[in-house]
Length: 282
Image 1: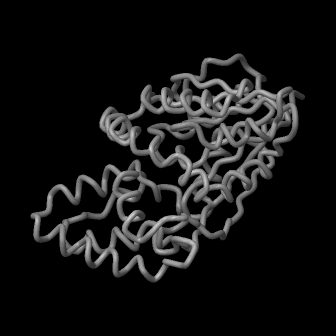
Image 2: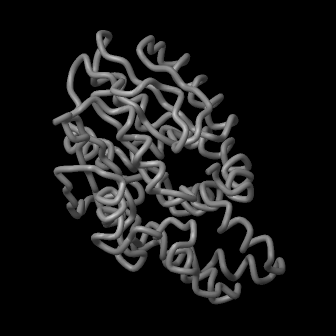
């Protein structure tokens, strides 16, 4: 099942912004990349698949880790994201990484191809996550690991709520359905783990990663970055009057200053790292 077309359109419109802020986003989420590398048991010379890679992360970081004898493939259903990832790989002169347009539940690779499959955040937006995980397991080598990162609860992540709480005072935001395609779809511990279990993964593991999101930018620049990263925030802001927008920005900047340091923005953050293995043939 392909992603919802509305979701696809949203990510297509966000692609130029994610490319523009690629390096800052890489820095902010580097601890998650490290956790995926650890739980995916990724090492030198490995073949690794990054699902829904966006503009190329964490695929590009992993490509540097596996070395010239390794190989990293990044796939994403949004052509604009894949084009951005290819441009980044070219600038970095990485020869061991390749990016292609593909859907998570229909991967263009033979069975038993990869030493690890990883995904940072994308699984929350899969229409059929069990089917997608089954497909990830298909392309994994027996005994090897897949590792997925999803946001823990919104109220534990000021990276999100410091802006959304302010904007939602002015824009009606009805509660989402429990399985809506949303950043916090798998925030409840055990929910994504059960998806992996249903898909047939073995050696299941789930851990809470508590870390700090660090961005070497000002409060004002962070406001811009978050709006440009999130099509939902941009859509809500566009519904406001000029006066409301000015007031929302004033309140948001005031809220964000709590997380401003002499080295830029710094947010406590919580993410769930859920992993499993492909069973060996009996």
